[in-house]
Image (cartoon, rainbow, N blue to C red; front, side, top):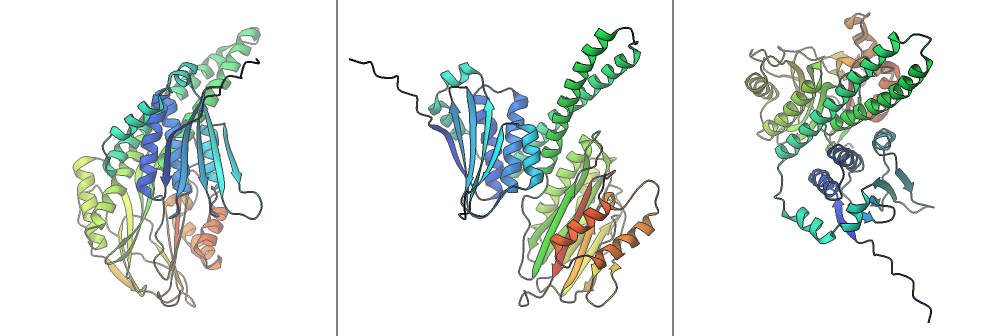
Length: 445
């Protein structure tokens, strides 16, 4: 009798997670770290996988569910994560590029033919012993035993990961500087040593680039995953980090629907460092919490100012808040030292809404918000100074250039954001946020 072939072990999923809301993305990030830890990945690789899935989850987030399946493959030993959806969504180039740099074995496959849908397949090598001895039931039990985390818990977890990533990046940068010094001191006669250091130098550069990409991707997870689209309102946003790879910044934006209307905000923590990014995350989450209490814009600024002085003394930030009434016929502006928003009204010249108060963190009162009427079809543009400010230019002149470019740009917010980035955002010296909205009475849209 011919012996039967050995039976192949079934590849039973460790976890199947539907993702259709922002809390689902937070849960996916937590579960990804837990699964990565269970299969024996180092802490840095746990953060790398969790950050990549958080980035893709936010980028692909839609009301319709996307399914994320975690499977352990014994031969070759690997953790496979498969993201699948059945509608016309697709990953942005920015997110897919960032994830591929973090996890090189990432493959995106759109649906074949006319049917909608697509999938992203991620393969992460794991220790052979972990794959051989893994008990799926134990991993599932560990995933189910944790208590639900709050938004603050998620923010703190992301902050800890961001700190670790930046510390690793800084360590790699210090090592790179040390090697550069050695290369400089190497004389032409020691060619063998020079060749050895060159190989090591290349490896450190590559590792530093990966860690900085991880830090930037983590930083993006502090920003909103989705934007509201109230009736009559179109909103678009672009975020572009500085071209420099030395530090990360504290630019942020927010859009929140409240009982008083749609709240739009753009801000910038003064400075470029890990700490600036952390302060930015605290301000943005505090703004969401305070906005739920339906305060006027200038009251929100005073609350943020108090919070900054209480928990982050010595730090300052600029924040501009615009509240748009539900019928889209009037807006209210409160501005703590930020660039003024630009209002483009059909048939009239573009104008900056110049009202502003002191920076946050100075413990000074904010003036009351100022209201302005809105004509149907008006556009509102809010930016951070990285879009227009350069070392050798006059800020007032650059603001006028921005005004003229916005007047000549597309009426659709998406097109306007793209046009302004193409015009002003080449090799930026600072982080850039471009936030645009087009406003019509709800019955017109």
